[in-house]
Length: 266
Ligand code: OOG
Ligand code: NI
Image (cartoon, rainbow, N blue to C red; front, side, top):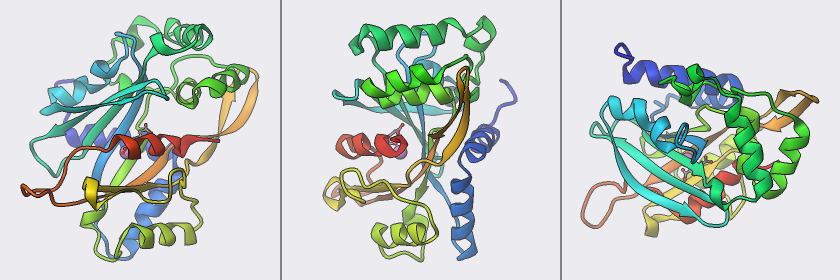
């Protein structure tokens, strides 16, 4: 990992993400076609709270490249915990990593997720770039459907594994949109439906953060028991507001994040 730089890490992450999420590159190009410069606010990852692949494991390459752990968030209903990481160079995207709390899941979900981990080889488990290694296990659609009943997050993870779940455009750096509503209409007019769970725009200036996201692209996933079209990854848009003490708010907002997770719903 000695040769790894932030540029190459984010480049590799974007490559896998864009391949799974053609809408992201298409939307980015639409912005650039309007003369905008696209800067990322954050990149998000999903994992399980097993020590072999938990948040700390996903965060390791970022920590080795100068990132520091910041605030933590808890999503009771979804049985998730999350932490974000930031670089002192504020032009670098923040990194938001969540994990499913296996001890809070039913025996059925826990066993299915343990079956996934058991299939990972030593080499896969010790890969410093595990965060971008995709699905490292065999998986079947019957299990996906069962998992989906209890945890959409668990089902998504069983189908897609390790990758950037979304990149997020830093809207403050865009010039041609008055607000997120206007930006969302532009994206919907281009043919990409937005996530309306909890309303189109999540958050407000009062919590110093407004966010919206597309619904994840549907891609063909090959399971042991056939191929199915499932939501993969999505694109998010975040606008940050000035805090009374000065400077833009840098954290996340749990109530908004709770709804952003639903961008991978079927
Ligand atoms: C993360 C959802 C939360 C945000 O910006 O609040 C989030 C996910 O869907 O994995 O990204
Ligand atoms: Ni996000």
